[in-house]
Picture (tube, rainbow, N blue to C red):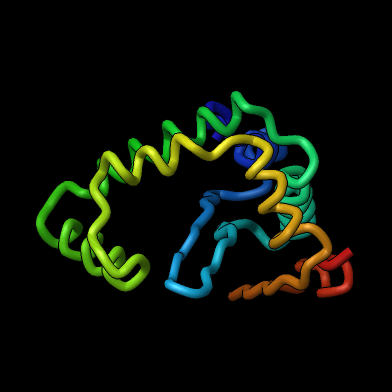
Length: 153
């Protein structure tokens, strides 16, 4: 919403582009998937796509240390909140075993998170976002969703 920290969420809220939006990241040992999930009215599809892609590409060029610090804090808080309950802890252990081959302590994980800076975000975004093919999946009345060539530009 309008009180969210990310520029993407602010742009979506200010332009009333979606009912909800969230980013996701799935890590595997040798690959991963990152993206954005949103629920929007058909008439808002083009604006939603524009602001989402604009903000993803922005990471390649304009990422501040303050923004990264805020993201680090939010990520650590989310990760700690997710460990509330034995099912979530077991899921986390399994994911770490599959990804890293061992269980990583919260202290080590937080040290890895704290080591990330804006320059690393820009470099990673340039590798995986800038001028790269993308995938888009949509359900419902998607007649206003821009075509792949528009998204890819």
